[in-house]
Length: 213
Image 1 (cartoon, rainbow, N blue to C red):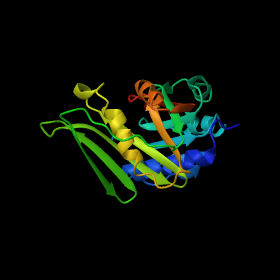
Image 2: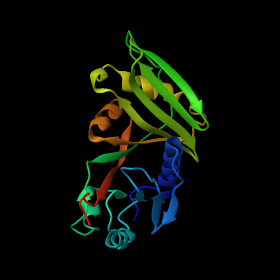
Image 3: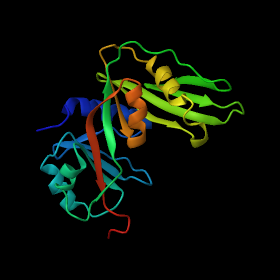
């Protein structure tokens, strides 16, 4: 049984691909495949739950930089693959209803730029010396409003820039019915929880070590 609605997952993954200029996901082994073709990631397979197709896939793949991702606890994913696959850092699929959007608020000395490229909204926060302090992306697509790559430079963290980015990006949402979705790291989960987000599911990942032959 799927942990997450497969349609929600497909819509989010499609929005993520749009935000990153990647190919659209395609069905593969009861999951979805994105041929990312990046130096650090050749391909990713994403499953809504602990599907038997994961085991078949894990036996066939022999190259590093190919990731298998699953909505569910890391132990459930690990049980589906062979021992040579290594768990990656914890992450979480999080959701939030649209509701009222807070007004973006920046601390003194920072300024923000919001732009749109196709379906993608981009928010960037700059420090007083015009260096990039934080940035994030959002795409509304097929019933979801996906936030992506919300990042604050180390020297500017804990100043509310992440919350300001989220608020600014949220103003681009057109449909109040669209489900807000993002994937958070362990560190990011705490921030998003303070902004009203909740964990829908752990988002677990395995990959072969780089020295795998």
